[in-house]
Length: 143
Image (cartoon, rainbow, N blue to C red; front, side, top):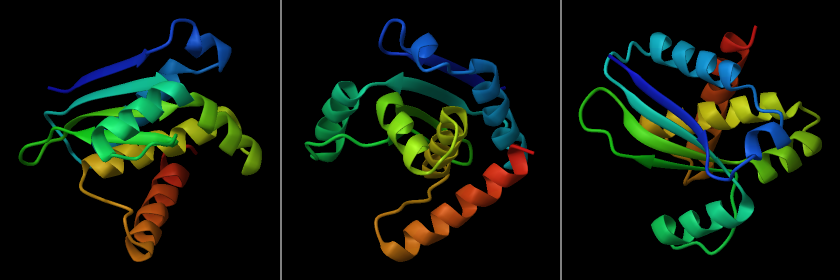
């Protein structure tokens, strides 16, 4: 049995950025099905620059904003964790990469989920591997 939670840490944030919760949930379900994860507990939280900067400093000792933070509480095969997506940064990146905000959010959700599977992007080589997998999954899931 899987458990999913999608929420906004800031009141009124989702309508402001026109987030489609159903699309995020469908993406999450496709990922879970693709990787055959039977017992997963995943929380996706939409935040702002201020909130994610606080989390970045608290958990990673980095005093700056970022686009996505993943906190992995997994033990064993199935995944358990929290993904925090900075909607302010997602909007900036959507403009830079000429994407809709929904597509950029999808990329960040997949990126966070890949972290929960054990992928990391601490080196250039690992980052390239992770981005390649991320883009493969985006093309597969967003047909």
